[in-house]
Amino acid sequence: MTTMEKRFQITPATAITSDLLTLLCENYHEAICKGERPSCIPRIRIRYVEDRDKFGYAEFGDFFFFADDLYVWRDEEQFADDHSKDVVDNFFEEKCTRTGYAVRFLYAGADTNYVDSNGEHIFVGDVIEIKNGDAVMEFALSHFSYLDTFHDPHYRFMLDNHSLNLEDCVGKTDMKLTRIGTVYFQLDMNMTIYDLDEHHQQFNGWRDTDEEHKKKVLMARFTPNFDQEEWKYDALDTLGVEFNWRE
Image (cartoon, rainbow, N blue to C red; front, side, top):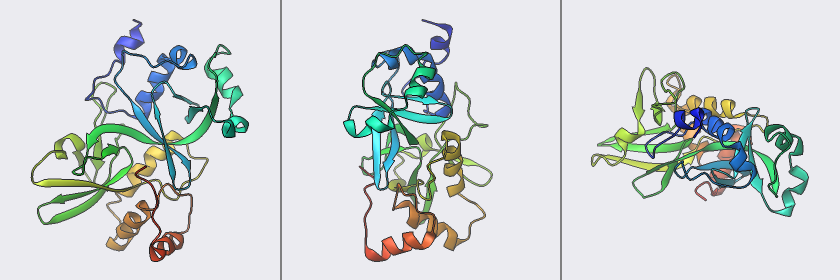
């Protein structure tokens, strides 16, 4: 086992941040280029934006990060024209033996392996309704780099001058957590993984008015979505359209 493998071993309780995923992909690039899933790390599943109203999911070993972008291996011929051969040659030093197509997608958070009150898996970037007694709040789940280290990261609901750890909220008898959407609205295809991390933070804007917050909660239901204009989300709501963000 290499020094890096020892340093970045993770446990089921470890929060999977984009920085940690990037380092793991660099560490295990040889296994990834062969289509293998290293047995020395626990199951890691990520979500990505495949299209408007369509998320995709990938297990560790089927994706990698390069130049702040996510690339997922897909076998379908429809992705042949999207294959990023130059990226594969650079990342794997022209030694990749894997078949299929490495396609750039927008990263949309890791599976935390925690579940909400309905038993649904919670992902980074999910908007969660938190009911605590008579109080009802909606927050986006993220992680914040200056508070976390590679050795002790946490999934957090970042607030004004403090934060709530997800692990402290899940399973409490007086607290109900329900996934109600995601932060992946008003997207831009040029966003990097770090742009998307900032996107998480912006949802919980402590300077937002009640009306601005309600608008974000509404847009969270119609994700993933590249529409920039807020009125388009209002129109989807008026028409009773439902997006498949849970799938």
